[in-house]
Amino acid sequence: MAEKCLCEQSEIIIFSCAGSSNVGQIANQTAVKLTQEGMGRYFCLSGIGGHVSGMIESTKVGKMLVAIDGCSVGCSKRTLEHVGFNVDEHVQVTQLGIEKNHDLNLDPSDVKKVFDHVSTRIASR
Amino acid sequence: MKIEVLGTGCANCNKLYQNAVEAVKQSGKEIEVMKVDDIRKIMEYGVLSTPALVIDGVVKTAGKLPKTEEIKQWIK
Image 1 (cartoon, rainbow over the protein chains, first blue to last red):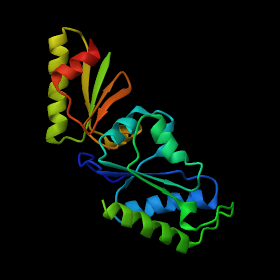
Image 2 (image 1 turned 45 degrees about the horizontal axis):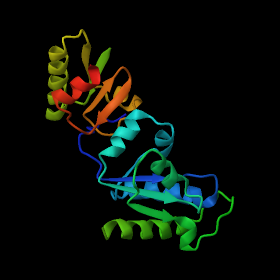
Image 3 (image 1 turned 90 degrees about the vertical axis):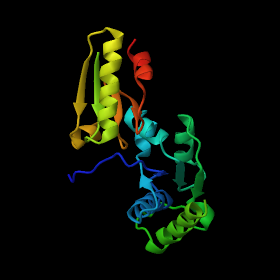
């Protein structure tokens, strides 16, 4: 593992639902791409749901929380709110015209569409 | 009781360690305070921002520099 200092705080923290549908995985891939493009930092939603103290305390220092959900169930937003966090930017993939199904062979153009939308929303803040 | 200060050695990590040692000293209790600078061990706590303070395995803060008085409240 490469040595990396963690002293630089993550101002924009990104969570995604990563659910077991196309839109859940599109949400996940979008979060990965946003992190790779330097738009924020992907944190582990399951760590929040599991009440992992390190994850929760690390999230508290974020200046902006972004939640990307695949569908209207809104698991990532709900999970964050359940432990007391306010989500600053919430995006739902199905609201961008992508229909939910269980085909996990993702269309890269769908990921790009969500990425473009979320990155624009983050940049406008 | 055991206190662990997680950090890779920056000024804030060292300051937190000093605050923790001072808090223990003022409390008059026998509490072990140790530095953890191995990034792999830090990641095992799920900590993504340092410095972090761990008391008996529970992360109390991450990415912050709590003062001595605050730490004293956690160990009293």
